[in-house]
Amino acid sequence: MINVRELSINDAIVMNKWHNNKELFSFLVGNFYGPSLDETKKWIFEYEKHINHSFRGIVSNEKGEDIGAVYLIDDNIPNEAEVGIFIANETNRGKGYGYQMLGWLLSFGFNVLKLDKIVLWTLENNEHAIKLYEKFGFSFDSSLDKAVTKGEVKKIAKYMFLMKENYNG
Image (cartoon, rainbow, N blue to C red; front, side, top):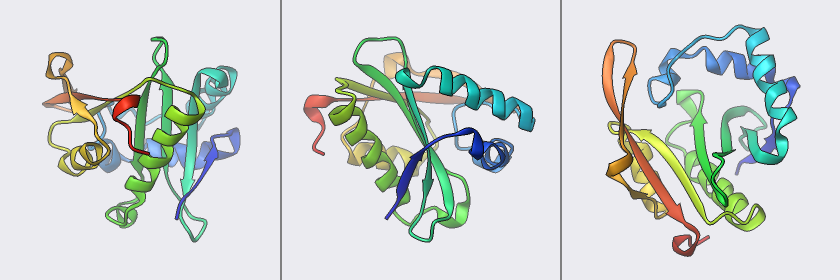
C-alpha cells in the first residue's frame, strides 16, 4: 500500500538525488540534466507558487520509505492534465507500486479535479509502462508522437490519453 503526500521544500534532497539518477532518466521522456540542490529547491518553490494548477507528490511504501514521485500537471487546456509517475529505485519496481500510483493519480484527477482527459508521454521502448497504461484504458494517438534525443540516441515518445468516460476507477 502506498501513501502519497504533496511535494514540499523538505523533499529537495531526495528529489535532487532522484533527478540526478541517470538510470532512472533512461526510462523517462525528459532529458537527464543533473540539477544542483539549489536548482531543485527553485523547481519546488516554483511549483508551490502555482499549486492550484498542478499536483506533485512524493510516494512512500508500506515501510514509510520514499520510493518515487507522481505528477499531475496542468497543460493549459481546460479540463485536461498531463500525468507522470516514476519509481526511483529499481528494487521497488515490479512490486505493484506503479499500478497503485497511477490508480491514485487517475482517481485524484478525474474525481477530485474533475478532469475530462488525462494525457502522458512514454518512450516507445518502455514496455512495462505501456502495459500499465493500457491496463487503465489509455489509448495511443500516434499523430502526436515525437522524436526525442536521449543522450546520443534518438527515440520516439508516444502520446497516450484517457478520457473520463473510459475511466473505470
